[in-house]
Image: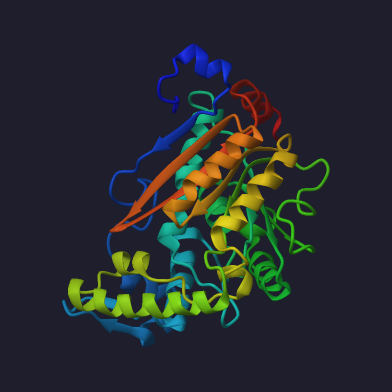
Length: 342
């Protein structure tokens, strides 16, 4: 808990300061992440033979792919999802976001650890229903959460083509069909309104918010990342796992990569709306790519009356990332809420 300087504990409680808990991560992926070390390309080619045609060698003579090539990244993702998560079918339309799976999986693993620590009795597990804001065509978070932790999901999305693609993935995977529901967000000016229905209750929400402020900024970011990726390959010998976490999520439509005001504006709107649904969601959360956006978000959440804020750092190779989670319920209310979930 952060207490203002020169304020004792009792005074801080009287001022109703919001606990802000910062959790550091050791170097490397979460212990439950299935993607430690280098990829086993022989095993991956066994499940997706087409991957063989796009494989290459790094300067050390090891198998890899070009992480700046959208087709190569898509084939790698397909192979990972089939081999590690039991997915039978996965595909996305050309031009849509194809995210690096290890980093996405870490978000789910750290969230699961937090939820179990906060809500579950010793030795027990909670029933989780989650909402993914901006599920995209790839449906990555629901796939990982449903496959590894048996969470049930609602995925929201504004893009009709992305919705069609996500539903096609769900409908063609019997293991996911009863666990994931895709809903269209009809109003681009709202985040939770119109998606969280009366009578809906969620343990947690997830989100990978649009980062850039404009299409031009997004294009410049892509070019910069591709350039850096080439330099990394020459300098480090292109270790597959470390390169992937430093590379841009290649592809992406407007709503996936940018919005007016960028990440800061999007998460501020999310915080504002979350207060209105504080009795239907135990924990809200979002990734934050930019460290400078942490303080403005936590300050706004404090003003809105959040009872607890958690900042979870994640480390993937040289890259640092984090998500922020917040609740408007007391510890007792969260525990009682979790008991009612079925």
